[in-house]
Length: 81
Image 1 (cartoon, rainbow, N blue to C red):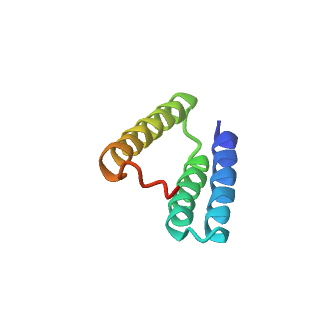
Image 2 (image 1 turned 90 degrees about the vertical axis):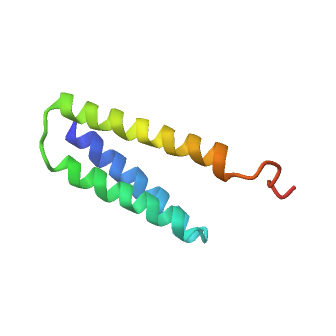
Image 3 (image 1 turned 60 degrees about the vertical axis):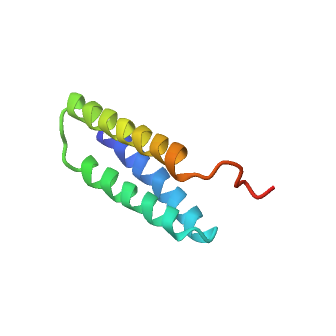
């Protein structure tokens, strides 16, 4: 399970690099923080159940944050088309 967290850290690090290269520094910093969190968690050698609980909390917080942003922060029709 710690190796899977290292894989998550690798891919969020790649997304961070793409954000920085694409001119989106806020996105890059957000994913860089997630990569650091996943990498730090991978070296704690916790039990598999604990890793699954942490990942479940991570997914729950992501969905709450994404839903809040989508409903309350985005302006309808501002796609720029």
